[in-house]
Image (tube, rainbow, N blue to C red; front, side, top):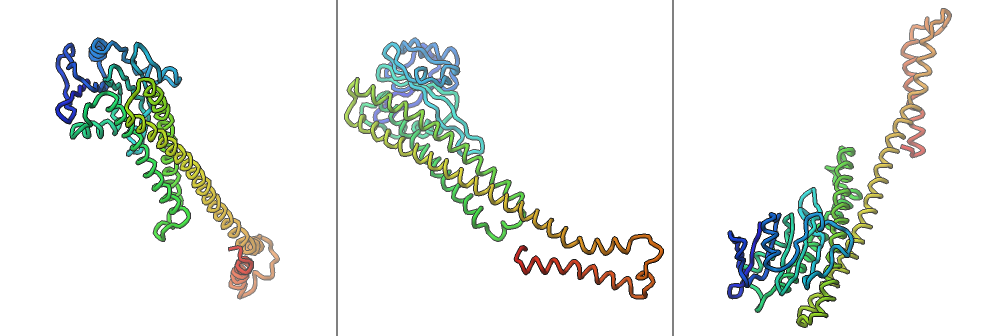
Length: 326
């Protein structure tokens, strides 16, 4: 799908032209979402650029993601997608800046694109161009990462509370509760690592744009906005690292709690084995098939044997309680 954004008064109007050979000349932003070969060729003819393929966008080398070709600046970043679900993922998005026009190529729908499209439809700065839209998109991506980290931090705090200060209603069904907590910790760890990967990628793009802005003499406000973005990316990356360390601590604590619970279960079985050993010995003695056993002829031999077994079981139990081993 190809969407074209053109300035109309103080907004950017979105349209999907049916004739790909006659795109508006005053286009500020072209958004390619799962583009077809015909849409790629139309954009390439209009701007004289080469639209990268999906495989080229997934290259991990910096030289393959940030470069200049025929005067156009190519920047590929890894953005978060579906961060609000249980299956977040990273998707590559390419920003191409050519002749004060912006072309974005993506094969997924990161939330910042929807937010910026809605924002530009309400109003844009005077003389908006491709650089303006690029900065708006990068700023929205950084804000989105900050929101994800904030929510992940709150979720980790809740998991920590469930481990160290569980409610009375959660003290039963340990196995199921521990399983749910471990799954939650794993998901938050995966989400945090993906956000950090995205922030590193965005930081490279912002650094690249900052270097280019100094060369082409962007406005003072734009350069100040880029510097603010660099500081935000650096602080968010540090926060993501802190959150990863916290998740590791919570995971270690959870494994320690599980280990203590297992030790308590083993201790219980060990105590039960010791408690039942003397009664078993007594029952075994009187269960032997010898002909001459005087106690077998006693009128009260059976209840006395039972009392002996109860006493033999109670004695080690009382001893363990006295030692505070139970």
